[in-house]
Length: 113
Image 1: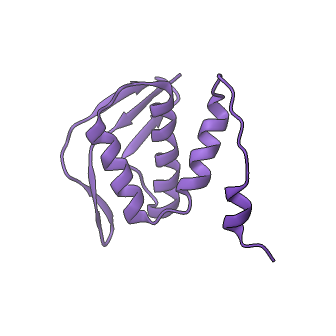
Image 2: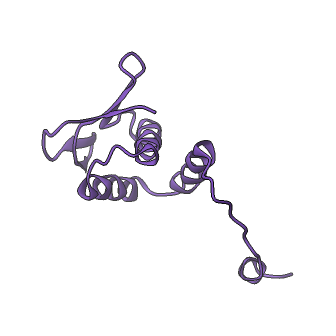
């Protein structure tokens, strides 16, 4: 039986010029779902440190974080609004025994695509 690494190292991946937004979201969701909650918080805070750019793919990234925070913690530091078609990123967080707490009170709004 071959090990999975030997199969992967011989695989050729092809890419196209266009990035499909749904494919991007699905790709990241399938990878982030395996991360620990601590790792998700670290990655989320890192994205805030990078800066809120408002790029379409960053908005999708925050939506993915929102879904995973709800799944793992029952709440999220991100608020989605279908009414205003926006994503509200409330700021960096730290894990606590009851979920998380905010490190600051900065609030950024991103327009949904």
